[in-house]
Length: 195
Image (tube, rainbow, N blue to C red; front, side):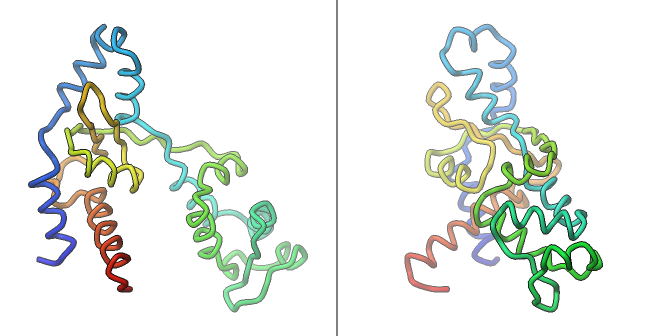
């Protein structure tokens, strides 16, 4: 078992308490949410969100070189060919779709967390991500889940609720928990001064 798998096992054993799907569904369906301030809004936080990342990646992969050049001007970054030349506005009109290096553009969007901004610039609609299960989790795990962009509601009547977007597989194979385990490994490497 590698370190990531060990971290996931520890997270499941120590930081995930109980499935709360029925609790969340019952809370959303009752008038109790109306009586408790912000409860409904918090339950929405762990149940559904917009995902701009996937539609932006698809658009950047599909957009014409001229359209990508315009996007790069908007983002104030250079666009390059696959052989390392800077793409000018004239070249962008004539260059073949496959000769433009799109990965640095995606990396710049990722590094600047500009998914929504770029999506709106390109007039895209976000995908909707919905929780398929809900789990009560520790404060520590809630903070880590927040850092990896998971659906999480903190302090809903004293509970932290994670909205799990994957179903049909065990928690050991959950990509969100894998992202948390990688985050832990990265944090540890930063503390220890390792690459």
